[in-house]
Length: 299
Image (cartoon, rainbow, N blue to C red; front, side):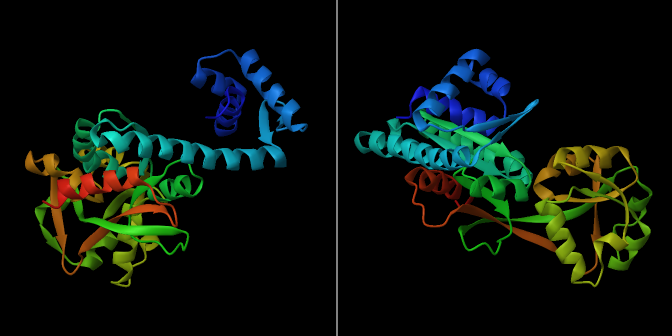
């Protein structure tokens, strides 16, 4: 088990702030400072450089932070492995999961509900960000398992196929573009577009699909870039712009007529979702979540 001083150091390094760490740990800021001073006395070196309102890790602090990430991962993994030996259903642990927006909002809720019902003693932490941020969080050991769009090329990450998803063109039911349901891909040049932010998996697969038709995204009439599926969806309902969203995210809006789907001849946008883990690491807890997810969606 990590000492109290190491736990405090880890939180300060993670938050990059003494005050934020104090808030997260429900202890006073002077107590935080005392723990850090004790640890610096043990290691006989400074762990943080204080620059006015900000703090930075020293080289020694960076080394300690990286080592503690690994120690915490092993500690949490060991807790699960040992407690599951006698009774798998009573196993304890911490599942640190990250997922891109579409997965977190429209795919994972059903999976996590089943998982929590089967394993109530396992705490679940979910990071909901775009694909790039989830991947960075995995590499920085902030999460131990991720689900993202499309398979990357990183050699230090393992990719396991999960499910497929379709991205479709939609606009408000009041939009002038609903006068037709079928368009040519070249008609996109005439339409005002609202799209996701850079780093979004939905945006990446849209860009890739358009390039197959020799269309560059930046050549189109982009009016708005919005962070998050829900923000984009709600904007489209109230605007005259066209947008591209995962079908799973607009099922209700299509059903009740708030949004209409438009078809573009030859434009099919299908993407794959993958589980991602750091290559070479074996986690029985990760395997358990993956097995649950596959059972829910691959019945």
